[in-house]
Image (cartoon, rainbow, N blue to C red; front, top):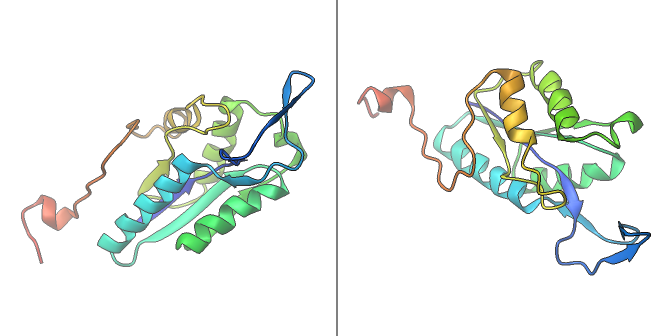
Length: 159
């Protein structure tokens, strides 16, 4: 099974923030893998364990610092990582991010795409649904448990 997990790097949710010019001053604040995306990576690892030979590919879009989110996911056990970066991507909204991720994912083979529920920085929860619409694939939101079965199990044949 080919599993893609979309991940995002966000400001550390435990860090003290400062406001400057009515905005969060991001200077010096550590960044982490979005916690909801971390759950998606953990779920992908569970699926991979159930289906030997499966492969997990992480994909992110963002500046050079976004590599740390990929490194975290790889350290958790993901197999590969793809980093889409260009200064033009810096100010994209959720629709723009979903469009670019969809374009990249179309070049890959996949059976399952996992996204975190939402990013803790903007709380928009728009990239996952947008991605599904653009890829013309089914989408389920706010999943609390994932149970997949093989074709053999679905047909009642368990080895």
